[in-house]
Image 1 (tube, rainbow, N blue to C red):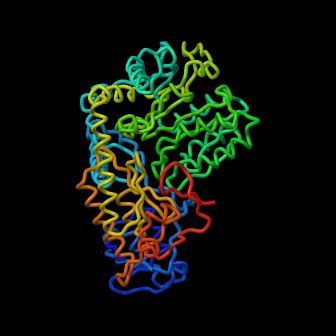
Image 2 (image 1 turned 180 degrees about the vertical axis):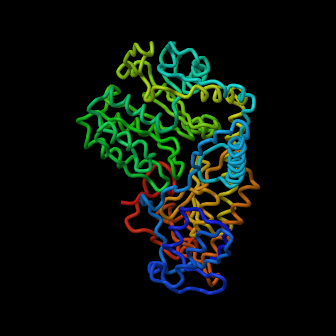
Length: 519
């Protein structure tokens, strides 16, 4: 692979030092990077790192394995914009204002460029909130319970409650039966939902699939809860057979379950109806289990997908959380948490200082976020969201088909806009497109802001990046059957059916066709 660089970001220095061999001004060093401290080329490499104008060509050694592990002190973000003290005469000269204006202009240019190449994370970058800029002059804080007026008068509770009412209707819970608030992020929604479950069932065991968001297991550590990881199918959906086995083993204690509506990496949807059926079969009555539904991204998309399973409080669930900065496209991280009023009383405490009730994870809460959410819900409405969901699903299938045609293994779950494929070896390409990777796979999450033109540009770049990973030009498609299933793998063994028994100890289970679980 040949890479021409005019500059280098700090995190890439470590990667290149560990995995590359270099060619400076036409002279190739064959000294292993691990021995660079003793190499006569050290001075040249130092000049290259410190001089961004020095033209350098790198060749990847295919025999050197890239260490992608995150190591504190090596992968740390080292660049910073230092704080400068204004000069005594700055009010006259205006030098500091000019300096800050230049810094912000360069930063805006960076944001524009990075937004062009964004596919790996579930953020809708297509929004225009110019009408709300007039509110940035106010410190809006919704501290405390959104339904109780605080002594702090600069708030947006009226907007917040309007948003919460909208979501309560979406999930079929009456106004007098629900409680909720707008969180600072999706993680806070999970932390709160699981905390309510723990307060309702203090000795309950937390059950969550291995593909659940990391915040679920963070909650277990924070609250010192007993937690059980449940196996998953190839799709990323929870393995209901393993769940039933583990619920049976722990049935002496109540169950607190996290149900995923779109897993982090594969966008899989857990089968809520089957989970409820299993709880009943094992012997859990409704007063002995609590279900938190993590719908960070797809929780807001599924209601607008035809024939999709329904998330509703008419079923015995305890709470639902979604992110506001993902599908909706709020410019700051936020989320929505809805739970049953009868549950929140186990958690809340009165706080005289606030003249309010403490029932949220955070004390002070962003008062601008509810206004942005209210604004978007009013502008788009149900029909607008339905149109955007159809756009996402259609473009995800377009990307899936394009990648399959050029011999990439691909997994696209039903009801999902997350397209999973082989992890590119070219880390510069991964960085450019801001891909989220795990092991041998990466994914693209098709959001409303993603166009067919952007997907075409991505596929063309991915094809080139794969070619450049092989010095002789002969592309060897990696086997990722264990990650996405043999029927989706494009390696020679599985693509042409040369391997009739693709994976050892694979058994056909689950409710969906062609899903495999590995023991």
